[in-house]
Amino acid sequence: EEDRIDTTDDPDDRVTRLWSYDHHGIDRLVEALQSADSPILWWQHHPGHFSYDDMVRVTGALTNSRYKVRVITMHNVKEIALKGELDWVKNFDRVFVHSAGDAELLSKAGQRNVVVIPHGFQRPNGGSRTVNDVFTIGSFGFLFKHKNIDLLVAAVGRVKSMVADNVQL
Image 1 (cartoon, rainbow, N blue to C red):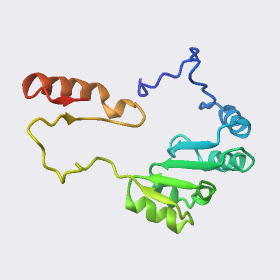
Image 2 (image 1 turned 60 degrees about the vertical axis):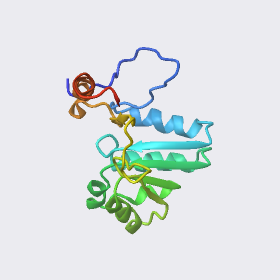
Image 3 (image 1 turned 45 degrees about the vertical axis):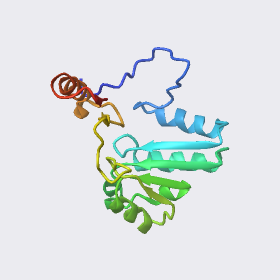
Image 4 (image 1 turned 90 degrees about the vertical axis):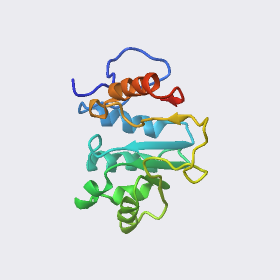
């Protein structure tokens, strides 16, 4: 199985799954966006999950929604920009991306509120470590098979047992 995300219909009171890959999924999502009471929407976007037509429908629904702030985190902006399909992004108040190149593409498309949060991290003390520092390894995003999270967990376990106890996941 390529995708490790649990897509079953098992009930979970904490989560309402509105959207799916069926032809009615985007209809349910648009309806929920229009009727939501939350003041803030933070959208996680990937072009492999939402088409241009989907996002035009979504941003159309946002126009008539109660959201006061609309934020989106985008991945693979270049893929969308090459098709000339970035006009819908202007309907978000702020856009988060992971590269300066993506920010530039969005700026050229008319989005003025772009924030770059690069992948990785920097140590606040300029990169030097003290003797008792804990070394933290992490991952974020969708839990797809190609991210090899199971290998990451196993590797951290091996490092802890073979090298140092101050490694955490």
